[in-house]
Amino acid sequence: MEQSIKTYQNAVDVIKTAILQSQARAVKAVNQEQLALYYGIGRYVSANTRKKNWGKGAIEAISSQLSKELPGLRGFSARNIKNMRTFFEGWHLLEQNNSAVATAEFTRINKNESVTSSNVNSAVVTAEIPAESEIHQLQLANLPNFPLKEFLSISFTHHITILAKAKTYEERIFYMKYADDYKVTVEDLEKVIKQDLYHHQDKMPNNFLATIPDYKQAYRAIRMFKDEYLLDYINVEELGMHNEEVDERVIESNIVHNVKNFIMTFGKGFTYCGNQVHYDKLGHDHWIDLQFFNRDLNRTVVFELKRGDFKVAYLAQLSSYLRILNDDDRRTHEEAPIGIILCKNADKAYVEYIMQDFRQPMGVATYKTADEMDPELLKVLPPKEELQKVFEESTKKEEEV
Image 1: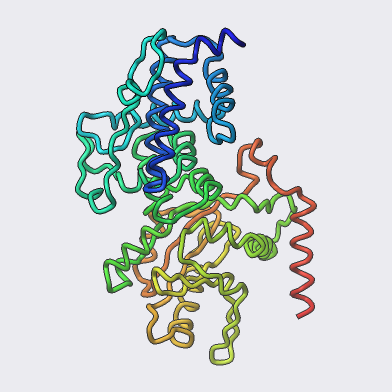
Image 2: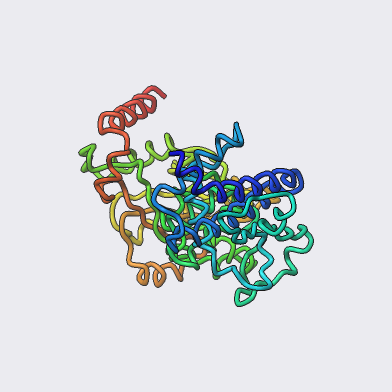
């Protein structure tokens, strides 16, 4: 171990100096400074490990010595230093002469040369971080549309999550913007990526452009929903419910008990209003499966849950609900309500064709449940007995009312 420490002491000194300098500036721009530091360390580690300048166990030895020389230091475990390398290698395309991304630049120091106050500045060079007002004016060479503001705004952990789970440049940019826009936690970001939001955005069959007068509002609604959702907390088949109506109650019950997850599936701005919401119209009872209000759209949004394949009758049913809400429930400052049918399968072309004659704003999306997921993912779901208990408790409450 002593030999390892001596061998990598130069690297320890360089990284330690960068850390201390970075901490002194952290008050001004904590997150941006951290990203700059991690990116620079990642470059330094990448260059020395990928080119075999360091031997096996180098990162572990460096991490151990850093913790000894900087007691209380956090964030520099061997694993996290490797994450810094991943961070650099994932975004090394930003390495251009006029790049405005702040980086901690490490220069080589001869192994036999000691780090002193006279050569520290040549060993560690940190680029200036742009001010907030200047960010939008910056252009990256070959990447004129790169979202620099979002890149510098989200945390290092968010970055590592995106790099690990989103493989293409376009996907990473999308989830970077999503994380900054919606201010999601790392856990919620992981769920969104698992649901593959990138490949399902803006593809839900709908009639929003034809039924929402304000085209900006129409496009906002289109962007809010996707064509397929993963409701991985539902396992209807394991419950053995083969009656379609009963199965729909199971789905609804599980959504209500996981309403936060359900809302996160659709994005920000949703407020849960209730399930099986009752409306009486001219002596006829109407029960809406799930009712929400969305602040961004300034509209009530209702969801009708269907266990089987899409049927034209579902649109007629949803249209009647929206008509009643528009006449009896809509406030003067609110926009007209919209409705989404969630069903098991749907022919998109057929849905869009049939939907042309409906005047209420509607869309049709499909969903997947736990029984269609990878067996490895099923292991993290609640057991069958727990789901059965949820359904039985929900049924008992309804009978008591």
